Amino acid sequence: MQKITYLDKPVYIESFSAVGGLEESRGPLGDKFDLIDEKDLFGMKTWERAEGEMSRLALNIALNKNKLSPDDLDILVAGDLQNQCVASSGGLFTFGIPFLGLYGACSTCTEGLLVLTAMLTASKNYSRGASVTSSHNCAAERQFRTPIEYGAQRTPTSQWTATAAGAFILGKEKSDIKITSFMPGRVIDGYVKDQSNMGSAMALAAYDSIAAYFSENDPSRFDLILTGDLGSVGSSILEEMLCEKLGENGRTISSLHKDAGLLLYDLKNQDMHAGGSGCGCSASVLSSLILPKVKSGEYKRIALLSTGALMSTGSVGQGDHILGVAPLIVIEGEDL
Amino acid sequence: MENSESYKRRVKVHSPHSKLLKNTLSAFLFGGIICLFGEIIANIYLLLGVKSEDVYIWVTITLILISALMTGLGVFDKIARHAGAGTLVPVTGFANSVVSCAIDNKAEGYVLGVGAKIFTVAGPVILFSLISGFIYGLIYYFLTLFI
Amino acid sequence: MDISKLFLAFLVGGIVCALIQVLIDLTKLTPARILVILVCFGTFLGAVGLYESLFELAGAGISVPLIGFGANVAKGVKEAVDSFGFIGIFKGPFAAASAGCTAALIFGYLACLIFKGKPKRSR
Image: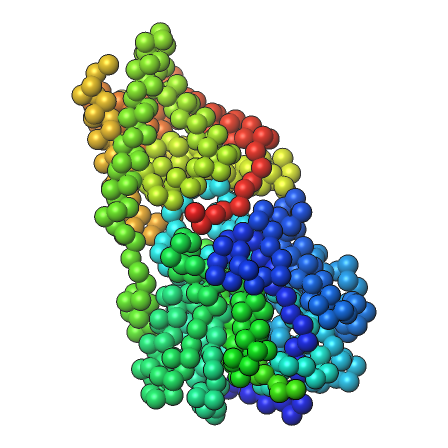
């Protein structure tokens, strides 16, 4: 069973940033990003290095916003979509901060915040740390799908890996956004083998975590329940299941549910099919759109579940089901 | 919790279908136009005095060259998004698969990056055409012995 | 110029592409598998002699789709077996199809020397 942790002393989000590419700047959140590179290369020569550079820039911006230096950070947790997480380690090693690499596929944003919150709570030695998450469309296309110039038609259920990174600096000093509760998710069989229908493969994991958390929490106390990248297909499956299986509570959750993959892009004018995906998707939506609204008081309490599709090109080639995981954290506004 | 069968049914209901009619129509138009273009340049090559048995080899080479250029300029995948099988089925699709793999893996070096990965999509095509040709050769040889 | 042959090239080429599009949309076969199916089908058409009559009729309409590549393989094998006997089974498969292969690989290599990769765009 999933264990829910309610923090006696919350952990505070002190600073956050979002970095993105051209498609992200064309979306509805475009002007809310801290930095955009319209070439998607961030001055690097390859897409893989560009992803690492995005992480570095995101952390740099988050540090500068609060006039912090790398020495003020005790721990860095980071993850991305590349094999062996080389974008995070390669992009962030120059800061010289103790580092933990994470892999939760597209769930990495929530996973990182959760792990960091737990570390800050557990040890006196850690008073401030950062969580950084990135994904790059071209690096992901090359690794998981086809060459970038390859002319293939995408199916309507496929999603678009975001070229984006988000950095979050968490600490124990009081500020206006806090993390009050967290719950790791279980790995759930998504029953789907189709690599271009990942929203469906992850919807069950999101349902599993939501059902567990709201079995002992009242959803009407929340202003938003945000999933990471279920896209249009996964979202409609999740909402249908919630209404069918959780009764009145399920209908409340369903009405509060939004998906970061559907917020990042303008789906009418950008040809993204079922929506955005990738670990940069929930990270950049959280820091460009959601956290400012928590800060301003528009949202008092939100639940964030980034959803990860756990698979590799090898496992898909061998016909394995795509597995899903959805860790959950609760973010609240603090009256200062 | 959901079981495999009930969930697969649910996924099927919620997953939008490809626009079959629109896709098929545009595949027909793009594919037809590429073949028409091939036939037109075949006629031009004939007029220019190319030997009639070589004309269609030149057509193939010309189409491959054009696809390579369009892939390199980043136009091919934009057209293919609408054309679907219309650009995949003609030799243009084969050329695009070779060229895109080459460009994509340049950063990993010219021998193991380009050299090995240029065959990612072309390799299977070459292998299976060889196998089918080999099997036909065997059958044909033994038929000629007995007939 | 033979107008009716031009029209048949358009029609036959278009129909082949349309049929394959239906196959892709209904079965979700990957493009690489589609190409393999096409060349094998081409070898079959060449082997049973249907390709030649289609080619007479539609020209580029059937030779430009990858079916033509497979049919050339069959043609090469047949000619090689006719002139060399058993060893022709080994000598033949690529004889008539090599031009397309060589062109694609050489142009592919040249293209990667000249061009840089560009990011995918949604429009």
